[in-house]
Length: 222
Image (cartoon, rainbow, N blue to C red; front, side, top):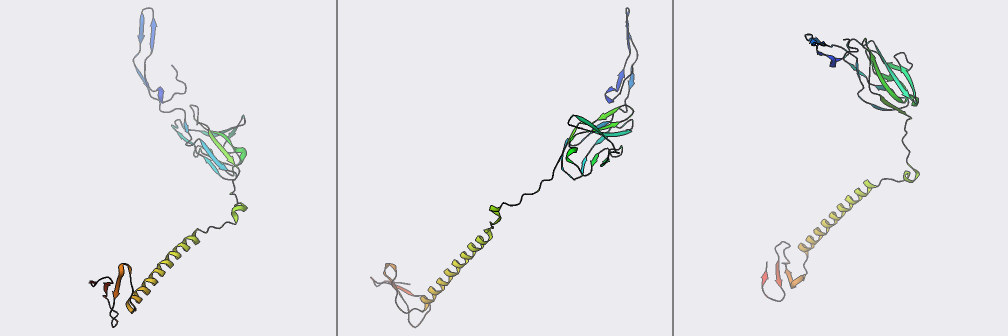
């Protein structure tokens, strides 16, 4: 029995069987260990987007490289045609056994398409899943429209005005309270308040306390 393109899954114990009219015979077991196979090629990301003029790298990782990998290349498929990309292609870096990733310098829109990484050893050729690369023209930021160009944000001015107004009201209240207190201490005329309460104050002294007397009765409250 010959195993073509052996892989790890072919490892195990094997017996040979033979059958004739008298019955079936078989051999003792023999063990097969596969220590190599097709290279395993993996691309970490399957979609890439870039703008024209930029450098874009399509990573490629090769494992289970026994027997050793002797060649790496990429294929680009677009509009029904396939292009082989090697380390000798113009405007390309990488695509070697040491660095299998594909590096495109100054990407152009025509380079958009599906890319596949390949690795070759004595067993055969391993390939990755296809990678989609999209190269687009640069997108410029829109200038503000004429309608909004003349608008100015007055938020800070409004907030400062509100704070200044609150401060002015507080200052005015403090001023009125001080005037009322001063007149209360220095006034000599009698004042009649609600409930007919008349404050009595000694003319010779401006110091509190004062006596409040009900005008309808003789009872005084201090």
